[in-house]
Length: 430
Image (cartoon, rainbow, N blue to C red):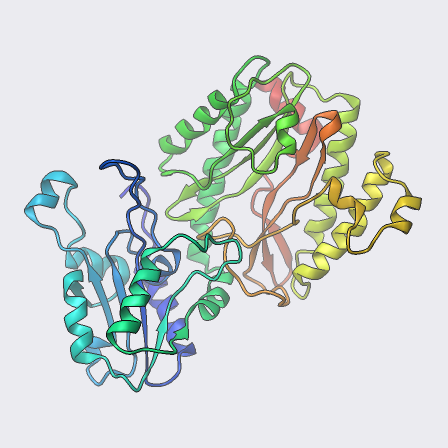
């Protein structure tokens, strides 16, 4: 295993928290993600279902979890089904987890092979009980793609005449939004790996270098430090490319006098970092670039102070929007007269700041969490304001990962340079 596994006590604790929220005499069923094919006999690789990993720590395909806390036999209250190794797999893919390895990783004592699940459910499922099925309820999900979870749920509903399953997603969203100390250690490790890679990135950055070479340096440093790679497709956007919010082609050349917006993060043990910085290609900001950068930095600091217990995402966005308007006026991009006359449903600041200021972070980069709730200690959010001026070829976004505590918040990426002087000093050392 490339990363250091989390202690199985974490997953036992996570399962216990979920079981407390289930109705009496109920059952919960979850499955792993599938291996996604490309063309011919190629595959894209495997990324575990975040909910299943949260409850088991198992990072392998063809895995199922059954929780049946009221089963009369204690050994059947938690069951893990995993893929069995055979001679063909040993030769072509390598050995899969043994039952003992799966027990050690998950803390689940009863482990069976995955091809036993249908017979086991036929024999043990109690139709009058409530059955909880998992699903991806994220608002940004691809609703057209038929996932392994969708197919698994369809099979369960058909096989057992299940018309109205209970939803696990709302419960798991709430549980996953509060990070345990063990999870935070993996996230901090992902941020540390990202910070180290950034130092190498600045050493490579110079006029005439292609964006993809900078991406390659990040990839190399991630893999060298036990990360499996990027938490998401990195954005290495020079000049006007930085005004494209999800620019990921990274195939242009960095020009003298331009800025490079880098939105990136390492993955470590399924947990993710999400960092954004902007650098002058030649090592020095122009006056205009510095003014825009400092305006974004002011919004960043303003917003970060408000990612605290008791605030809400809606209030954070509203407060940030009003402060952003002031910065845009100071930059000459808007006037107070225009703001006063604007349509409240179409605020003018959105031309220059068209995205949100924060999102949950964890097992997913845009992690799940309850909506319209007050922030609580243990929640982890990004803080990522930006200003994009297409006509000037300037796009600046700054982003760190903010942990809420009972006594304020902790910026987990505070050691990564963010002030103009520190960015220029970092470039000068490169």
